[in-house]
Image (cartoon, rainbow, N blue to C red; front, side, top):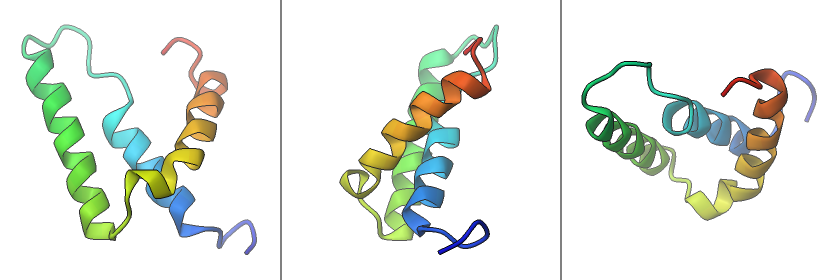
Length: 74
């Protein structure tokens, strides 16, 4: 494990975070549909990667905290 090759669960968690938890564009009219789509896409991605949410939960927690430093306006 090094800077270029780490635990794949972190990469999966980061992708899930970017798909599901980043903000939807401002001014969209069908926000509920977009949120549903994001959640569904994240779930399908996890299924394809053969990873459960429980397997990445610790990584997601760290990513969510780190994101506050990356994008404090979110």
